[in-house]
Length: 372
Ligand SMILES: *[C@@H]1O[C@H](CO)[C@@H](O)[C@H](O)[C@H]1NC(C)=O
Ligand SMILES: *[C@@H]1O[C@H](CO)[C@@H](O)[C@H](O)[C@H]1NC(C)=O
Ligand SMILES: *[C@@H]1O[C@H](CO)[C@@H](O)[C@H](O)[C@H]1NC(C)=O
Ligand SMILES: *[C@@H]1O[C@H](CO)[C@@H](O)[C@H](O)[C@H]1NC(C)=O
Ligand SMILES: *[C@@H]1O[C@H](CO)[C@@H](O)[C@H](O)[C@H]1NC(C)=O
Image (cartoon, rainbow, N blue to C red):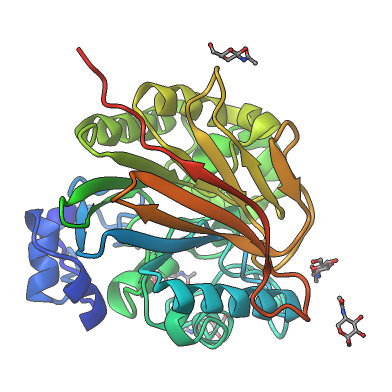
C-alpha cells in the first residue's frame, strides 16, 4: 500500500535521500502523491500513518564526521524556546550539523494558540512555532521527527500530511520509519529507527479515556485499542533491528523516555530487552521536561538519553546517571576515524550565554558485532 503512494518532496530531501528501494525511487521521481482512489476501504483517513514503512530511507555523508542535535518538547512559544533555538543554531552552524533529531511534542498550547498539536496541514503553527523560531542553519537542514503525545491530542495525521505534501524538511512520513546513513570514506553504516511510543506508554486505555478523551478517540480510530496492534508494532521494531544488524551504530528514537524508572511505564518495558539483544547503541527520547542521561552499565549496554527540555522544564526520570532541570538540547558528533560519538548536554537557560553551557558530556562507542 505504502509503495504505491508517492510523496511530493522538496528539493533538499530529494538531494539528501538517494536511491534504495521503491520509496527512494519515488523520491527521485518526485511524483505527486496519488490518493488511493482504488482502495475499497472508504475510511476518511487516506494516510496510513500506522503502517510502518517497509522500505528505508538512505542518506550518504562523505565527511568523516556526522553532527546532529536532539531536541524535544520544544513547541511552547516564549523565551525558553527562542533561547534554546538560538543556542542550537549556534551549535549547528559551528559544527555543520546535518540534521536535527526531533523527539516530538512539537506543538503545544501556548502564545496565541488555544489548542494542542496541529489541527490540519495548513496550521499556522508550522510557520510560527517551527520555521520562524528555528532559523539560519536550523531552517535549512531536515528535522527527523517522531510523534509525541501532544501530536495525538489533536491531528497527528496532519503532521504526516504536512511532511509528505508540504515540507519534507519536517520529516515524518509515517509514525514508524527507518533511515540508514553511510558516513565517511568507508561508508560506515548507521541505522536510525524512528518509533511512536504512544501505544507502548498509554496502555491503560480506560484511564486514558477518562484523562484524555481526544487522545483516546484518536488511538481507537487508528485501531490501537487492542494488544495485537501493540505486538505487531513491537514485531516491526524487532524486524528493523534484525535487518540492520550490519550497522556499526544503531539508534532508536521515540518520544517517551527509558531512563531509570521511566522504563517501567506500561509496555515501555518491552523495549530495553530488544535494544540489549540487538546492539542498540543509544535511545533518544523526550516527554519529561528535563535533560537526563543513563549511561551503559554492566546490566545494560544501551545509553538512554532524555532531551525533553526544548521549551519547558518540569519533570525528570529517577534512577538516572545525570540530570538537570534546564532548558536545552543534546549535541552529538560521530567520528568515523575514531569510532566514537561525543555528546554534550547543552544548558541554554542562561539568557546571558547565548551559545549555551555544556552541562554534561560523554562518549559512546559502537557495540561489537555479534559473533556466532
Ligand atoms: C486549519 O486549522 C487552523 C487552526 O485551527 C484553522 O484556523 C484553519 O481554519 C484550518 N484550515 C482548514 C483548511 O481547515
Ligand atoms: C486531520 O488531518 C488530515 C490530514 O491532513 C485531514 O485529512 C483531516 O481532515 C484532518 N482532520 C480534521 C478534523 O481536520
Ligand atoms: C561491572 O563489571 C566489572 C568487570 O566485570 C566489575 O569489576 C564491576 O565491579 C561491575 N560493577 C558492578 C556495579 O557490578
Ligand atoms: C523557562 O525555563 C526556566 C528554567 O530554565 C523555568 O524556570 C521556567 O518555568 C520556564 N518557563 C516556562 C514557561 O516553562
Ligand atoms: C544577565 O546579565 C545582566 C546584566 O549584566 C544581569 O543583571 C543578570 O542578572 C544576568 N542574568 C543571569 C541569569 O545571570
